[in-house]
Amino acid sequence: MTFRRMSSLAVAAAMAWLLAVPAARAADDAPFWTGNPNATQFAKKGQDRIDAAKASIAKMMTVKGAHTAENTLTLYDEALRQLDAAGSQAGLMENVHPDSLVRTAAEKLSQDVSAYSTDLSLDRQGVRRAPFDPHHEGRRRDAATTCSTSCATSSSPAWTRTTRPAPRSSRSATIS
Image 1: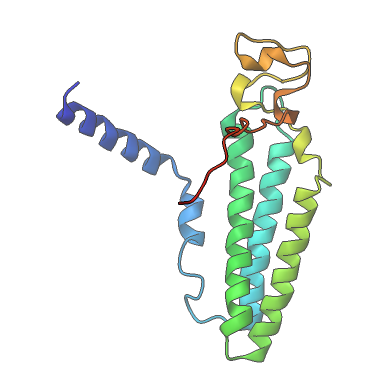
Image 2: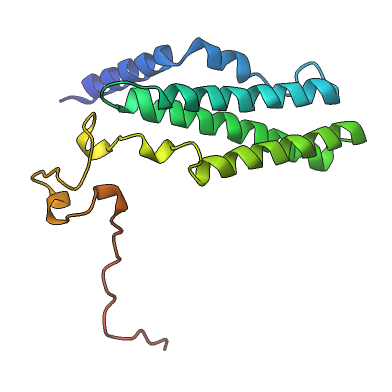
């Protein structure tokens, strides 16, 4: 395959990816300080991001049928993106804004983002029960599932196994 052909394919793939990005993302990717919002407006923008994250997780949890990267991981990634944006923006304003009302609103928003992020990390909503296994996309991965790859060598689900690093050489390194 020639370089020209490969570069054409790369450009086509990039264009397809750009066109596949939801239009809704464009609206919330504008600089967050556009319009110089006051404390109430800033808190609302942040709360809207938390609500968008919650809606994305709720949509992911209601998926019927096969769980795929598109209907599971994409929604989870969107929720994390919203939480990351809200938390980062709140953290910045909490530390640098000259208005104490905005700093207080940002601190509250930071706490709200942290609380919801903690709920997700502790799996209080059952997010980890969404049966998606990227190795067997669209198929539930459980102990009875086998395949021809290395995951068939264990009786535990693939995502619960941990990989241990290879042992280091028995020779000790000396510094001369």
